[in-house]
Picture 1 (cartoon, rainbow, N blue to C red):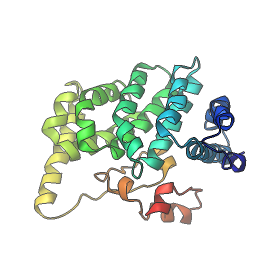
Picture 2 (tube, helix red, strand yellow):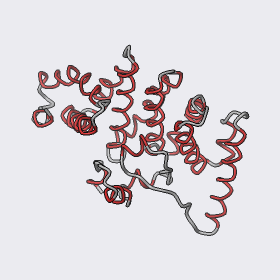
Picture 3 (cartoon, one colour):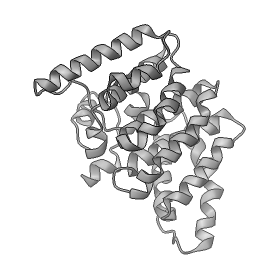
Picture 4 (tube, rainbow, N blue to C red):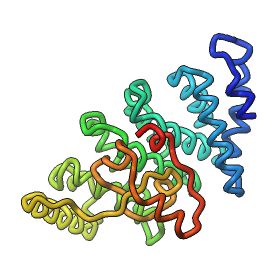
Length: 262
C-alpha cells in the first residue's frame, strides 16, 4: 500500500480523495499489538503525508479523529500527530508553526479518563515540548502544566514521564516560572524541581552540562521513562548514540527522518 501511495499525484483529486477514506484503518493499525504492523502503519502515514503535500490539511484529517466515539481511535489520532511532529517539526516551517494550535487542540483530552488516551497525550506533550521554541510554548505553560498535573497521581509510569517533562520546562524557563504552576500539594515534586534548578545553575556557572540520557527514537520518546530532556538539542539536531546502543541490546529501532536529514 505504501508503494501505491508513493505514486499518488497531489494535483489529482481522485488520488487525494483516497487519503481520508483510508485514514481510519491506518490510525487503528498504529495501535496494533504487532510491532512490525505498527511501524508499517507509521511508514504509510508518512507516505500519505508526503503524497498530500499539504501538512495543514493532512493534520485536519487526523484531528477529526479526536472526536471519535472510541478512546482507541482518539489515542491513535494523538499518536499519529506525535509521529508527524517528531518527523517534520525540525525541517518543515508549516508544521513548526502549527505546534501551538496542535498543543491546544490535544489539550482538550487532558480530562480524558481513558488510560490509553492519557498515555498518548503525555507522549505527545513530551514530543511537542521538545519541538516547540520557548517563545511558542511559554503562553501555553499554564494549560500544559495544569493538564499534566491531573495525571500526576500514584506511582505509575505516568508520574515518571511527567517529571521528565517538568524537568525540561524548568531547564528552559527556570524554577521560578514553573513552580507556581504546580499544585502546592505536590511539595516533594516542587522541592525536587528547585534542587534541579539550583544544580543547573551551578553547573552552568562551572561551564558544565547536565548529565542525561539522549534519545532520538520515536518509540522511546513515547514509551521510555528515561530522561531525554536536553534543551531540545537531540530532537532538533538528530544524532545520538542511543539508537546504536539499543541495537547492541537487540532491541528493534527505526531511525526517524531526522537521522536521514542530518
